[in-house]
Length: 309
Image 1: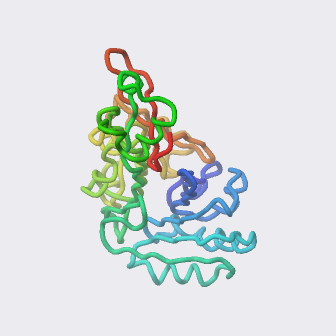
Image 2: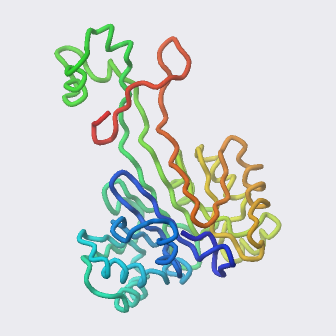
């Protein structure tokens, strides 16, 4: 929704990110102008099921009243869950109080690391006020191996029964499949390098992180507790992330983030690095699939975290 930091530019709105994750729609850190950016992006108010604030600095939350008011205007029928650091409760309640009433808004302040909803976790970051990053983690699954199924004479409806029950007669699911890690999405905003950021980024398929300063301005990054582009690249590389999306750029670099992308890529040679632009649509990488036995990498039969193929 927006890729600027504290000061927007002509082409970069204040911060904001919308994630489609199975049937959920998560809005992260809606800064000013997010309601209008939703129109440009084709994101309806009814798509939002959760709103997650990393902290209550204005460029990460001042768009909240407009978004909530739009949801009320559109008569969104489902509950909307709002997650935020507990120390920001007075600010959040003030923002909610000036929003139009009419939605089932449920407040979920958190004050430490751990799960905050099914599949959603937080870790503390290192910033000037209490700040948390978010991790969406799909449950691990299994990938069925067609060769083993064929060798065991399992086909048709029996495949579904094996998948559902975990066993078919004396044959166990583990014997007919390989482990497949669930997908992971991490959202890391204003922070200096810290253990919480490392935990969030670990094994992420899609890592969205701030890249406020260039490496040349590392002193400023240290002073204001932000990441440089190179530090973002180091984080992604050490975490074995697959795709790194840089955002939250300082206005001092104008609208061209190629310098920052280059610095991050130099520290993360094996990672796909994207310098985000407003309204970019970036897919979550496809699930990792194991190689078939005796062959090169090919797809098996994937099992989703809900048990479907």
